[in-house]
Image (cartoon, rainbow, N blue to C red; front, side):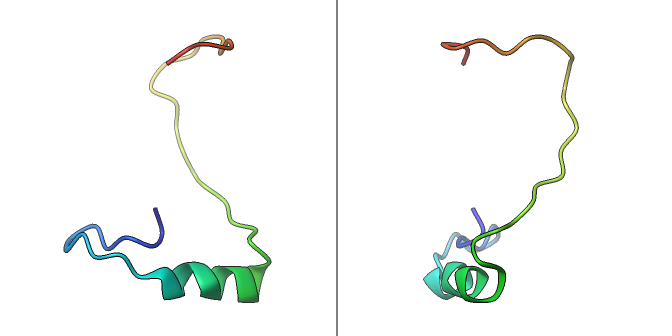
Length: 44
């Protein structure tokens, strides 16, 4: 989560408020799948 400092584990809600104010809650995530396959309802 963007509101949690990964090193200290401290929540900083101001980060989320800034994202909403400056970017209209639009953010992106870059990821690479661990393996290919089909995602179905109920998968975990």
